[in-house]
Length: 322
Image (cartoon, rainbow, N blue to C red):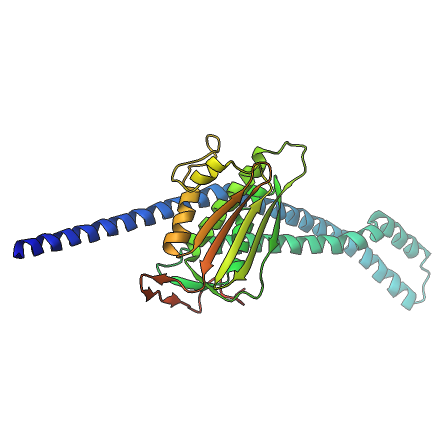
């Protein structure tokens, strides 16, 4: 009897150790996938930042040259004003001012300088937005559930992945602004959204010719009963029933060489179903696009015990944090 108890204890210890190893392996896989995604996005983000930085630089140089010309004209006006005050002859000064006004194209500068300033400020804001989004997307999070602004998390992922979809599709969002903070693992949820956005872009690209109009990716959020529903739809080619049944299998992919590892949707399923106790489904019809439907519960439970929700002041995605 004692020997059987010892065997049972040993067996339980072995099961617990195996469970820990599997969990560690899953965490490593998730981390590796995120690192790979960040690396993949880096080139696109560099391109995204380069464009606004370029016109900020061009506009700043234009403003520098324009200010130099305007300073000459203003100096001439000052000379003219002084001459008028002294009541001396000033036909020569009037001619000088008129000539300078024509040379510096004052009317043109009056229109273009404000526009250059506005574009420069917009460029700076775009760079800041990209950097903020990358920072939020790359935030490692923690092993605890956090209450986050789900809409903002999705928006950040859209921003950092822009170079992946902007050449093939438009992005349309319909966020439920009344959503309260949602409990989830932010880093892993971001990874799920990223994988699905990239898949949507690839699906559109695969059935689109260069001269065709851009496709569409739609992302929406809304409250459904006690869940938050996230829908990610694309106007791609859709998929057959056979592919649809296998879409969440590890290493299954319909993409060409170099376009996918077959792990993205398998990881998405594991993150949503296993970690968040949610649901993920796919609706698709060949020739009519695909929609992934994610359901996240507002209360996440692990077994019979409710998982504690981390709700710290430093949460990057809390509402109201700039």
